Image 1 (tube, rainbow over the protein chains, first blue to last red):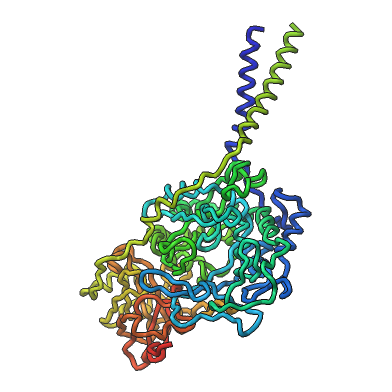
Image 2 (image 1 turned 60 degrees about the horizontal axis):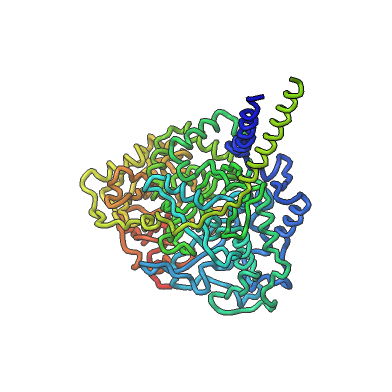
Length: 398
Length: 228
């Protein structure tokens, strides 16, 4: 009986530590879809609500709802579709501007040149004197809820762990729903957005021409004010919340487990590290703990997204790998020739590579890296053809 | 004794439960992502301008050495002319040389895993349309090519790290010269995402070659000289 208090205290301690023991090995984030191509919720919302949000993401917006006056597509799915809603596509957007030798200057009306208009007189074009031009491919959004749930400090820690000549640039960008307070950017080729709600509002206006509660003014046509005839803000049903919820509720792009299990892919997996690709194409990131308040107070990390292990094969930082694209958005002039490390998860679904989709083979995409990646790519050049094939097999399993 | 054991067991279970509740209370304590100051790494991310870059022409044997480093034995230098300029616009000196595909290494030059990229100068892809930019046809034996090695840092193409290399098909035969892009405002016309210097040919075809950010394309020099 004298030992009773010790037993009680010991058990109390054990009980306290038990959950910590579990949290030491974060669970893997669930896959976005299964072999039968069923797109399933990650648990953030029920499947019924997820399917409703997906429908909103897939909906073609009519003129009456405010499409245009200039736009790129009528639905989120038009650009985020491969191999399933929320994935990538070959669709590119066009950006342009002028570099005066010191600073990048936006094209009149903004660097985004919309490819479509609801009236031919509204059509945007690249005007003379805007010699900086680039295409940008559509990005994957599957698993982006987990990316949003990464603490900004984690991104800074990744940057600090990279060699000096390869250190990724962490930028902070406004979160619309938090009164434009800033947070570590992570979405878009220039890390121009930090939250999925801001990203949805941005894309709804800039890709579809639908004004919303955060961005209530329609885009111009090369700087000329034109009207689609619908009163602003046009997103009266708050579709942007549905888009954000859909992306937050998706799982991560699943790997080709059959290919990943092959000896070649596993050898390539090891080469990916030894060559140095994983310096920027970071393979493991753990999301913030459940209950963490992120997005400057606008979102709390839920059970479905918190403390999960993800394998994005990207660092969500900006790097100069010699490819441009010459455009500045909200990261300042130092980001002009930098792009976000392309997360390689879901890469097996992509045939056009790099930010502009202008490179078609895996080998040529690797060789196109220069700048900060020069040393890593020279290590790749030193591999035998067998090893290069193994590395590419590994990439094709992602 | 039996009662004592029961009491012990009950206390242990209660303590375990209390511990679990207590720990969850700790886990559930509000945690806030701390705002970061602007990136401390930002200043060093301003890409250091290449200062005092060495744009001097190659000395005897230098071009051959660099070609061998980039392409091995798959190409042979054609003539003496080698152009030096900043063709990809990164501030570092690059080297361009007219070469010929070596007959003894025909398969190697077209290897899809080669350390260089073969591009067709005449292809001018437009990724806005659905059609994919075409892959170039295989290089033929003794086919004339324009070999370009992108430089690294102030030493440029002379730096041992300079191994990013292109073999451009369809370009006119050399010798080539590097000229400022300012002389060719027309290269900014559609499809011309050009940066850096332009390569000018000296043959009667009157052609220039320039970097688009992803590939080398060729164009009539006359058209390229015309302002938009």
